[in-house]
Amino acid sequence: MLSTMRRHGTTLALFAVLATGLTAVVNELTKDTIAHQAELQQKQLFDQVLPTEMYNNELQHECYVVTDKRLGSAAPHHLYLARKDGVPVAATVESTAPDGYSGAIQLLVAADFSGKVLGVRVLEHHETPGLGDKIDARISDWINSFRNQTVHGDNDPRWLVKKDGGMFDQFTGATITPRAVVNEVRHTAVFLQENRERIESMPRCQITAGESN
Image (cartoon, rainbow, N blue to C red):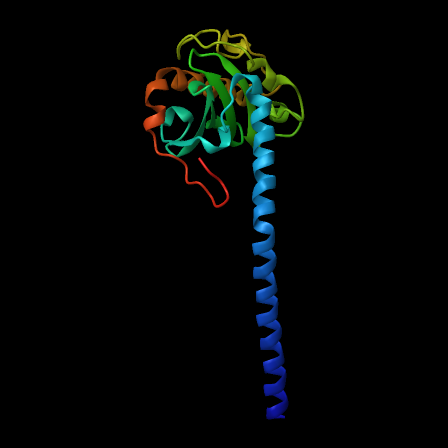
């Protein structure tokens, strides 16, 4: 019986080694494809908020790490600098609206350096279906109301929901969610307007294998 158990144990060990080796080989063969698909998805998202004719650099490969509470939290955020013939013209920033009804709302905000918002998308949220989830472009076009709107300072009275005297619609039965998004888009646009000169001195994002600057 002891020899039989040893034989079975050896067989299982061999299967485990083979399975681990096969997994490693598959991972090695597919990691570039997976990374490429992720990059394509990110590029598609960027194209939704930043007009492609505005820039001609590789936006995904000019990434900076920003730590500033005006982006909604003290956590690091990624900023992608758009250039036209080498000249910085705009940026796409990941920011956080911390005060959504059901928690933090992760945003992607594109704006130029004069305070003009070019586009916004919600990356992640936990808002109530049928109410606060109208911030999602798949649910409604409300998020497109930011496009081509200019922020004149962080106290711009137009950059509020209509219930607070501003120009942006709130949702029936859900004012907290759009208010949080409006406030953070305003903060982000003003941050870019005030920090154009120091962006290129910020830390660069870590480049993964297969990418280049």
